[in-house]
Amino acid sequence: MDRVGRREWVALGVLVLPVLLISVDMTVLGFALPYLSEDLAPTGAQQLWIVDIYSFVLAGLLVLMGSVGDRIGRRRLLLTGAALFGAASAFAAFAASPAMLIAARALLGIGGATLMPSTLSLIRTMFVDPGQRRLAIAVWGTGFSGGMALGPVVGGWLLEHFWWGSVFLVNVPVMAVLLLVGPFLLPEARDPAPGRFDLPSALLSLATVLPVVYGIKDIAKHGPGWEPLVAGGLGIVFGLAFVRRQRILSAPMVDLRLLAKPEFSVSVGTNMLGVFAMAGLLLLIPQYLQLVLGMRPLTAALWMLPMTVAGVAGSLLVPRLARHVAVPQLIGAGLLLAAAGFVLVAVTGGGAGPAIVVAALVLVGFGVPLSEVLTNDLIVSTAPPERAGSAAAISETGFELGGALGAAVLGSVAMSVYHSGVPAGAGDAARETLGGAVAAARGLPPEQAEVLLDAAREAFVSGMRISAVAGAVLLVLTAVQAFVLLRRARTDTSAPVPA
Image (cartoon, rainbow, N blue to C red; front, top):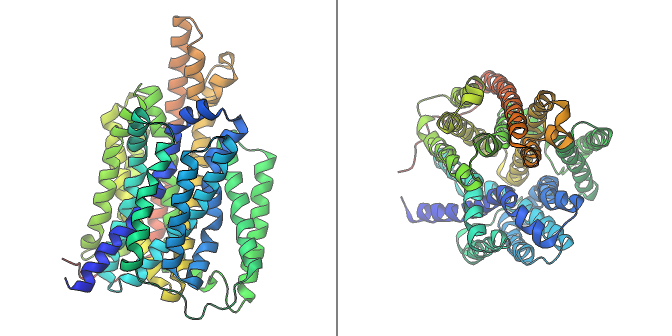
């Protein structure tokens, strides 16, 4: 490997750092919430905003920030976002009130929105060789897989030794490293002729994504209602207006011609649906391990680590597998492996011990990241280099929407089955969630508590099994459509893998 090659791979390690932290931040807050709630005493509404504002802002700004990066330079946007993310992390760590913490989380969302599309688009710039680029995206993808699993483990350890703000403060030194070495290792890249920045398009992109994400999350928490449906409807209306405006602009924020290419549009859709299924499973399995099998949070997190190892292995094996198997077939195979994991959850159900659950998670953890490396590679390689930031932002927005939809839809299916399976006399809290049933059982005589918990756990497992069947069917259909629609796509399967 020549000197330039070594610099590129070192720079890739730098790009993985923000991705790792962003995915850690998506999971770590749940462990810190009981501690910060005791300290700051937020109201119920404030607690919801503490949890949700980060993902709202992140999802809403991705498309806008991808376009900004194409205009001002992706390295400049990345380093600006790193400074903001580090400062917001310190602000969150020492927040003295719920309002301060909500503001800090919003700033973290802004910083995250600048970091995510910048990292993937810079990989497109740095790695021109298709084989090297595919391997680089595989390494980049392991940052997501690693962060999602490390979040609970790191969070649990920090909370056992320090105060709740430590889960945010850990971001600061990592962002400092990125700011110190990024200007020397990362190349600058931008669209040489970006055209005029269109403010109405920016506002329409926000008005499209924010109401949709709000509606999805509200349905996931409280079930269908007029408020989230109206919000989602408004988002769709603004989305249609956004698309219409992009068609008439000479320099659109989103190049809709990309969506006409099956390599791009099918890859974005496949990516979103794979995350949809996995997000639903990741919502239910931790509850199963803790509330059905009785594990402590940190123990449950450790049982889920093999899923991360499988994700890393699946991602890193992609470049070599793609030399021998056509990309559409490999994407389909990964999704079918993940579907097998869902089937395992559906078949074993309440009798499943942790080993069976881990086996299912390994199949899902191996299959979905394997397919996502290939779809992300198709997304960034299909887009012209000058539009790499916008293309990466579309991919990341699909990822965010897929995760939100998966948790909402599959979670709602499971909770609907759970609600119908718990006796009406158990009380509203017990019928709403399994955690509510566990809390209600503490105030009952032992025999009544045992009856309630048995019924609640059985109902939860039934809901989890039905959601697993739905997830398996979705993944099989996604695998078939990806294979059929991408079979004529340019795959570069003969590209060499770097030593």
